[in-house]
Image (cartoon, rainbow, N blue to C red; front, side):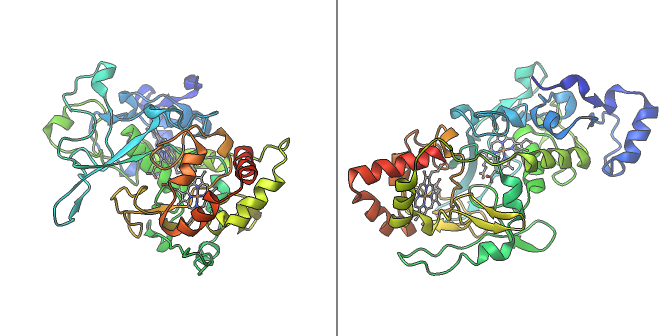
Length: 379
Ligand code: HEC
Ligand code: HEC
């Protein structure tokens, strides 16, 4: 259980303390002056905030997918991946016959939310789930967050240097993203659509929990139906300092080290020989030393079977960021849409730029194939 008792809210304390807190919290001055100001969570650590079960009194909703970050990022422990279909998120859109793409922002998109505050006993007539308007859905599994603080320190140039003809038709490209500090190389999210952990945390608060932040100050909803619901507010429902604490907590999560008891030398050689390392680069350089993530952090065209039809900036319909394989042994389901619990099936779904590598993989002698899987299961 989160140590919720340590959480204090401006709504629950006297105005004197509220004024003190306001002096400490940069967002206070920018919030709306509505009399039903939502509570701002103060006095908690990043770990508490990550695990905290929010309620509509803290700004949760009106629509939401979970009441805490830890509700999805939980396997095998706080900060990890999802476990089952309950931690899967649906991106939604309407794509017309000319290919025009509408992500349904404010009309139930761009992320479907499966719950409403009505389930918690608050009045709200909004309909949860995939909006009826949507004719396209992209399923996204919850990835683990271990080691992402190191990933954040990898310089753009290091990722860009990976864009070279590596033979076998493998090239890769980056998602150029401007989060307000100029164009940078995206590295977080299945389509590398986000540059910093702070932006991701802020976005997740608003998109998954319905908690507006200083950077994303409005619920993804519009219309009178929304305004009548608990959890609907214009303006931030959490202060920037708390978002930064959540970011710092994620950045502090150490990466999963390979299973030291496993003998995976043969499997690691096979991994390299068939060319998996063409994309799953064993390390990328960072100021603190090589980061052993098994990814080039580039986008690759993965062919028709993994195509979701969704575009995110420079990431096109069949493009995915090479999934880091560190910690693979703890994951329950594989690929962006969690389509399989079998590592072998996830590999066989690779096509597009991975076609030549997959040909060699499929031709492996049985003991080499087994050694490769043993290596992956030890990561
Ligand atoms: C409903 C489940 C769910 C909840 C709740 C949730 N996440 Fe996530 N998280 C996801 C999914 C799904 C993705 C992948 C999204 C994508 O790229 O399309 C993700 C991705 C991330 C990433 C990027 C990981 C990577 O490898 O690039 C970060 C960071 C993150 N979440 C932080 C948070 C924080 C902070 C919270 C709480 C405010 C949170 N998440 C709440 C499902 C969830
Ligand atoms: C052309 C680049 C490329 C090559 C070559 C490649 N991969 Fe991948 N790999 C990816 C991308 C991109 C994904 C994410 C696909 C998705 O989820 O839709 C991925 C996903 C995976 C996953 C699933 C991870 C998870 O947690 O969901 C595994 C396992 C994997 N690759 C292993 C391998 C192995 C083993 C090889 C060599 C036989 C290999 N890959 C070759 C790019 C590549």
